[in-house]
Image 1: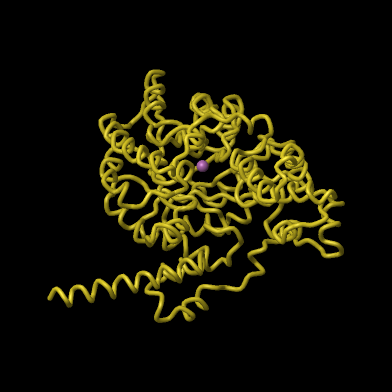
Image 2: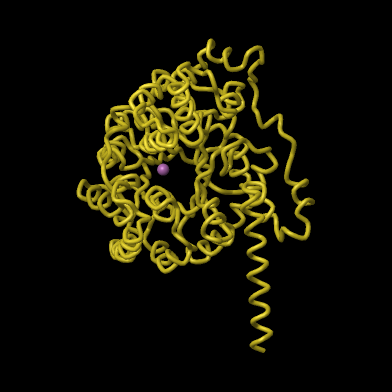
Length: 460
Ligand code: CO
């Protein structure tokens, strides 16, 4: 019997985040939700990552309402979100009561699959979210943040996967956020995980370096069950490989693909128009759609290169770019080889620039790097260079436990604080995640309703 390969459509989240900074409002994709629902996807990734933040910050949408509206239009397809473990959707660690309530409410509002990761691959930062997901009756997808370094061996990844299974993972995701995984690495890593656990494996990569189609194909040959793709007009470059192209190639090779071609064609035709609008108004930049192999040479993700450039430009030090670029992998090694994903990528990049411009390494460090050296982000893949840790911390002793254990519960306190303002626990959660944005949003919502109320009186 032909082996079946399933697809996660990313146009509603990652593709739109990678290409147009998550600026797709609900109304722009609403006309396609019923078609996506009928197309035969394993899941539609539609929430988490930056969507929550951007809904409140730029789109004037309640992210919870967006989720409920998507759910109502898509009763048959699993909805999937991305969640940064103990950071949930933010950049710092939250108390457990917030993590648990957030996961519970996400599932209540319609989420089926929660993809949970940690920037350091420290599973103790994933445990509370994993267990809450299982308890809420959703699929916990235990996720590896994929990176390469002398300490990131297949053996280590396999150990991590076993721990995630213990925590209740129903599927495993390998998340290659920088698109640096090559076809051989994909084949070998998927094979190693398949040998160790009997869970479905999902591979997530980006087309940034141009490796992605080959990487997916070899992963499929090694037995990967699910791949993440984007409908063709929103595919390629910093986004995912195209859904229709992968489906075509896999069918030709004898794999079973459940996608309905009439549906994917309709979705593609529609999103071509949307893409062209964003190209016209400058939101979608041509360079996001091209292939960039720089990160294969420097082992630095594409997003970090542009951050380095803009930092140096601000400091009028563009001529130091080559030095900063060489310094980046050294800082990463000093810090115990963290995967370069938010927030570690920013922390390492900023430090590399400081080391170069100060003329002395670690003369000044950010408060984030200090907290990182104190162990507040979790256990690093390799030990932090002890000399540098000492230089940064002085006599202060780093912690070995879980940072969230030191945090006071926050939910009840915030409920009380927001009495008369928050209308639901969802509001309370939005506020804890993004206090300033949520406050502004509540105010706007109230004003909008008051205006509508006035109109209806006049009309009556
Ligand atoms: Co991604």
